[in-house]
Amino acid sequence: MILLDGKKNSQKIKDEIKVKVKQLIKEKQRLPQLVVIIVGDDYPSQIYVKNKIRACEECGIKGQVINFPENAKQNEIIATIDQLNQDITVDGILVQLPLVKHLNEFEILNRIAINKDVDGLTNISAGKLLQGDKSAIIPCTVKGIITLLDVYKLPIHGQDITIINNSNIVGKPLAMLLSNLGATVSIAHKDTKNLSSYLKSSDIIITAAGVYNLFDAQMVKDDVIIIDVAINLTKDKKLVGDINFNAIKSKTKAITPVPGGVGPMTIAMLLDNLMILYHNKKSQLN
Image (cartoon, rainbow, N blue to C red):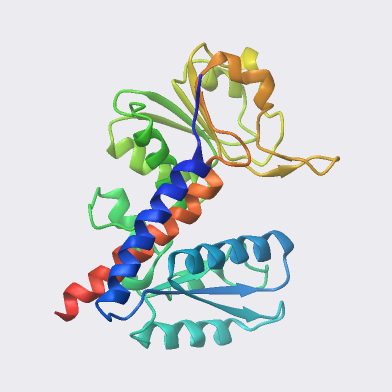
């Protein structure tokens, strides 16, 4: 059984970015800058943002947070995004999700300029990904999953893959990318009927349903690869994914831990995307 170590591999990526940023400092170049917009006081979102900014600081990247109260108006947030779109010192704009219910998530995300869409969630980025455009900015969690599979030389082409998530952030873009890479993909979710019929034939299962113990070892085949994206909190305050790791690991060829799997990779891919946008801007200006 291979443990897909996101913590170790994300640190390697961050170390490489740190070297690149040090070179920019040496050359007296402008440093890359990420701006994160967060609305309200949702505790998990606050933690996620804090971790993203800490990763920026670790690598020498500028990180800024713009906080809006929970009752913020749509036009206030859009006006801020418009200003950031025009700011030549800002390379990436990220709106922390989920947004509070009275806001139009689609409208807000699609206000971000394509050359600053660091999380790859605008409709233009999604369209590029669908069409297999190599210039597409890939959503960070999706990119983290693909990178982990690649690092451990686990094949995607020709594999039967089930994704248990149909969101715009994970399931849909991941399905598009895996399909472009030659996989046969099924998209399921926590309410899918006969989920086991999909899982039993899958070479790779990627789960992000947010339901602990969603499936067990009896529902998967031998030597399956499991990527557990979910973060759940048990009654005794323990962080877990969608699966009981200890109960299912012996049946797998490879598996991610929770925590320490996809989560750290998501943040590393955010920084990687930011560096891509930064260098794209530099090449356009030269």
